[in-house]
Length: 161
Image 1 (spheres, rainbow, N blue to C red):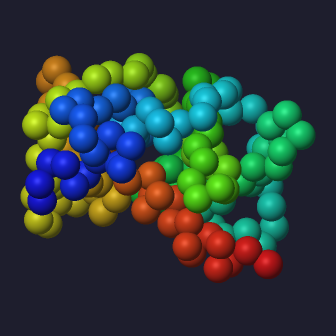
Image 2: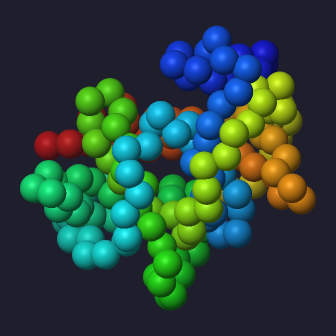
């Protein structure tokens, strides 16, 4: 996969990409900054009976009801008892606003597009099936997520009553 293929249309002609970096289960992930509207505290989430299993519930964000997906559930990881410090990253994809819960938000970091490699075949780290590229950040490996694929918008829209 050519490095440019993992970058969204907005950044396709750029030699760099800015990612919001965050952690889930001590693994470092990133999504393009232009896909992130804001980051909020993980406060009151209202459970929604009958929702697809990856949806933790909904939140009221300034009058808008927003579904929230727990990346721990999406990546088939254990739920943590200590919810302290968890954040919700708000994103808009195809005119739909979603939130996704992460353990910790780190920073916005600039990467050269050339730093990314395609994921090797057969990797089995949590979230690897949603990974479009990998890069080193210090001594950690950052997984660059295709957030639309992670949230599985098509499936969520099909399951909405």
